Length: 264
Image 1 (cartoon, rainbow, N blue to C red):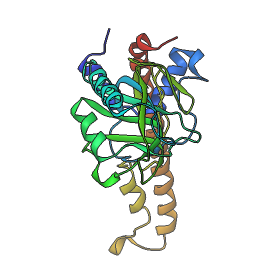
Image 2 (cartoon, helix red, strand yellow; image 1 turned 45 degrees about the horizontal axis):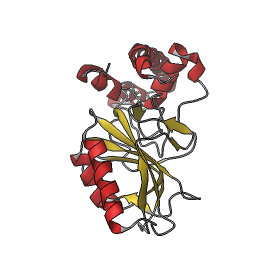
Image 3 (spheres, rainbow, N blue to C red; image 1 turned 180 degrees about the horizontal axis):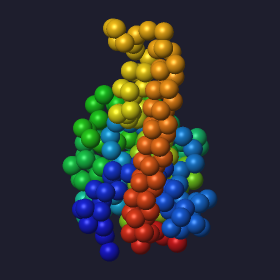
């Protein structure tokens, strides 16, 4: 049974490491499988996590295609139809089978816009991406590399099992992926630079502890500053612990529902 909009929205509010933590509690056997295990370049770290159902395919680019133009066109049409007919939202999971992968990019300005129009939120791929300044708005790229050329990039097949950086995925698997990566339908998760920032309300009191104001500054300032700083640090640590506990509890609640979609 697919998740409803409210459940999908809740999952988007939680980062992928928290999903992994929750799944370890709900499904302990998943501690060592079902997630990406190598770095993925995250093109847009500020975007919310991608949560959707996998559409899978394999590509290659290092050698010219053996099929004729008509066969290649027919294969692409079937691929686009496969994406369009899927219940949304969808996340593309694409394995580049070249050795090493990433010789040519399947993903750039054109394909990001085409896939966005077909309902895809983004892609998790072991291959490369390009045209980073011209990617469709809101379309996320988690990729093995970034490169300038598409070379002889070609579709090998679609709809089958793929392996992206250790994460084995089947069509229809539920995917949760952010800048940390992907744990899949498994849920999947791993990728790129962490540009995350958090507003901390306690920061103001922490700064005030170091800022004497006018007539209140005096000989007792250092002692008072140390006391205020210690109290502020203690409150901040308690706040962080409570936040982590609440976040994990939310993740566990989601994971219980999410587990129905885990491929055992």
